[in-house]
Length: 406
Image (cartoon, rainbow, N blue to C red; front, side, top):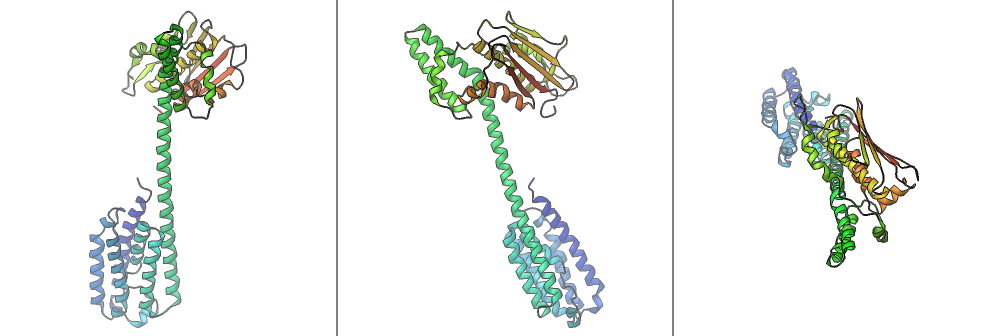
């Protein structure tokens, strides 16, 4: 909803209430007018005009410049008509004009529609009409007109600021949505395409012959793709160490495809679909990977379970790549009332200090996106505990109800 829509509703109510006030003043001073029937004719026109134009001030689209000019004309005519139907003494005493404070509604319409410049122009016209009606610069008249002028200009300025803030917020939300989508695509790419390209490059070099050229092309595409999804600057020379990296293995996420169908479990209360996290993690267990957890299922919302399992798979991929095929890994699942914690520990050589930050700058986003990014989107966290020669421990935490309170 537009931030200015409440102002239009307030203006609609203001016009109706001030019309009732003007009619009350007219009825109260009926006997004091020189020409009460002439004043009554104008009040009838004002009543019909207000009733017929209620919808015109319901939104910015309905309120056109032509209507605003007509509305201001009705107010100005009422002001200038006052000396013709009222006595000179009553005017000198400061008796309200025929439209009274209804006139301010016409000015506020300009302020909300066009900002402070339109408000200043409309206020000036009303001020000039009131000075003509009083026949001079009476102190009370000038005081009242200055209040109207300042108030309308201030409201117009506030409306302009509110519109600018609304545009800025909308732009920020679009940028945030685009950034999140880019990170999601980058995670998927890292978990599948990048690892496959790296594997093709290594196998092509090992096979030789025509496969060497295929491997070289796959390696070039891996570099280009890493550059595309990288969020930080890096030097292209860092890609030269690809030949020294251990051979990548197939993405662990591939092993999850079969388990996902078995893990699906709709909520008994008709709520959002939930999955058993243990069933999703079961394919990872093997001779060198030990899975430990509760004796009962660990249900999580579909997205949370899938993303957490993918993050565990990425952590195990890092174990295989950086600790070697001979490294052992342990997965511990802890089902707590408010959150689910999954710890992945290995007995590899550990991570040197500052290595994670260097890898992110080089475009290797396994930690930055496949693990930390997934957990951040779920409202969770990922922490690394490692020391050279003492293995690595990754602690993944996800709120039980998810970031959106599902």
